Image (tube, rainbow, N blue to C red; front, side, top):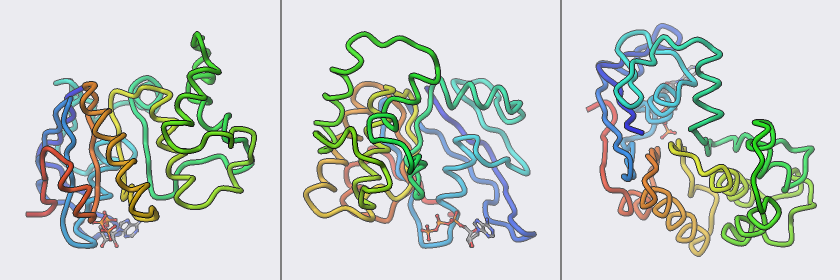
Length: 212
Ligand SMILES: Nc1ncnc2c1ncn2[C@@H]1O[C@H](COP(=O)(O)OP(=O)(O)OP(=O)(O)O)[C@@H](O)[C@H]1O
């Protein structure tokens, strides 16, 4: 899905954070949001993901203006199309790894054939094999990040919004996670990543300098 922001402006606490930001994120591409700390990368990512309202400008999904979407319509977008890998992981700490991976789908009431098999495959891909019964709160920061990624893969999201995905990962896991994001883009998903990490930036197809 093509995700566009046109002439976006956002002020937080009366201070302008984004001013006339325009961006186009194509399906099948990884777009990096880059720039110095505090330039508004996370804010832009949240606006594009409909997590944060804009003061001015338009957000378009596949050419459709979604800026004024109702809460219900935004929820549908999150449920049916999007996955978020954010800095706070969005993980339900008091639930098992397996629940955290599959809940997006089970909440939808969708039946996935080979459910268990798919869960195992996704855990294997993200290096969380054998951990499915563990409580999410027992995982380390990097493991929780991979859990959020496992959920996105399980859901097969068409748009991925990612914030600083490699910050708490060691070199081997960083490479693995970057590869998994690339796979998403190669399968045709739109991948949008706010990052400082040069390795992550190198793997992206498009760089968008926020605030310039
Ligand atoms: N909830 C908030 N309340 C007050 N100020 C905020 C809030 N969220 C963001 N800001 C401010 O908006 C500006 C942009 O923040 P944002 O997190 O988007 O930047 P960033 O480029 O992602 O930074 P970093 O690279 O350090 O993560 C910062 O100056 C920040 O202090």
